Picture 1 (cartoon, rainbow, N blue to C red):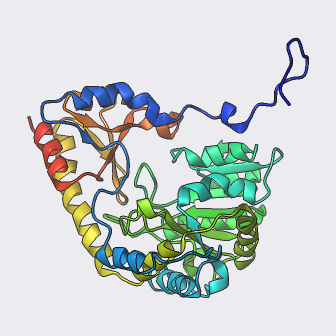
Picture 2: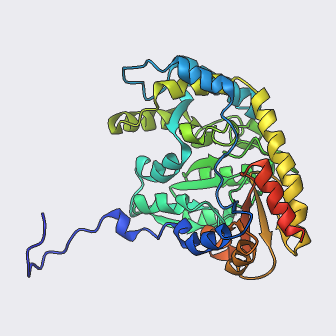
Picture 3: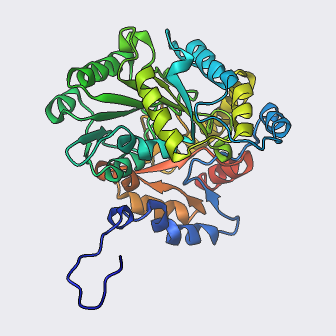
Length: 376
């Protein structure tokens, strides 16, 4: 009902009014500055894949194009089997079954809506890392829950949250949590009755450390109770445009989420399910893409240190977490003058305002151009 002139009835404010400005909008000035460079912009501010979708995925999508009917929310039997086999083979998800997996429409929507779908509300708390992807906090806001940035067992015990987000390898820092650290966090969450959602979307890109899943029995003690692992084909398979993600773990939680998503019409398109199925079974394209990123990383990292940046963490993932000991916006401007656009650390939390996130997701030619500019 709309308000009439002079009405004392307050207008209902939607969720959007309470959300922060979209962070990347604040980079418009730096982007224009970088774009004015004679050699053109090198955009390293976002983690959007630029390399081709593997041909086997494209072929599967084309061959499944004639799908006039609605797909199933839970996914095809072949896709669920492929998910279980891949997570068991690659991530030691012992005991995982088809009842404990579910495809999702890219993992960002899952991150944003999970607190609400789990039934959390204004009386609940969601914990997420202190330096983190902004959508964890946004998801807490969607549910009108209290978001708390914290990394410790002690914080879990004191806040007694309904949901704990873990992120290893981290976006943006590239930090990897080891088996003992993950196990302690999972144990603490279980002690207070919290669900653990572990964002593991960068797991295939370990450089100086080997990422571990919460589905690994060394972490969870042989039980998936209360656990959800979040995986994506966006980075490993260049499938960001297909919106191909998945969750796996506690079968009872997966069943609850499946029912909710059925009612909400969250259906992954059938052709995308077919592409996921073949790509999950293939490791050759993952190795090829990993090698591409390794070459770009080996070129860009020393170029940044050459101009005074220190690289912190960054032992895995698609980014270099870099600092010159100055305000991150000054670092953004310094690089923009060289035609290089990066993401400021203040996107990711109050404690990261002296870092910038430098993505490896540009073509070989653009990465080489950035390295050359940094060498001057």
